[in-house]
Amino acid sequence: MALWIDNEEPTHLMRREWAQEAWDAAAEDSKRKEKAVVDLADRLKEWVEDNNPLAGEASMYADLIGAAFSEIDYYEIAEGWIGELI
Image 1 (cartoon, rainbow, N blue to C red):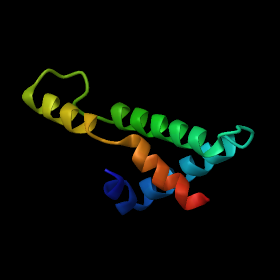
Image 2: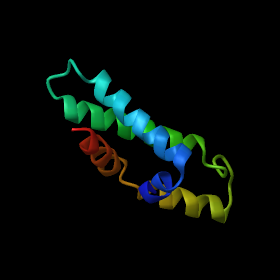
Image 3: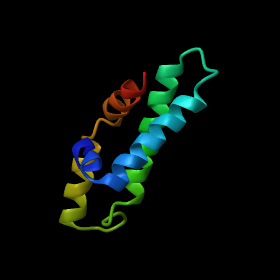
Image 4: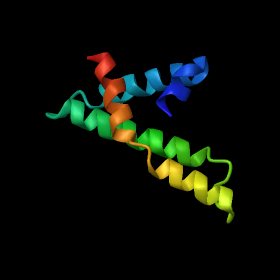
């Protein structure tokens, strides 16, 4: 999923902006990196779920997409993106 996001300029720019926002928002936290990663991972997961064209449908395809999405390690992706900033 991270590859797909980085492959398109609009989503690549979006994720860079989100990473910076998460990093900036966690500036006062004693565990800044951890907080930024968790917040970014949550935001990414919400975005993926909100943009799932099959959400709410009952079909074999919706189940397969849902199963694939459940395998995404949002934390790992966010950790890499935050790591690029620091």
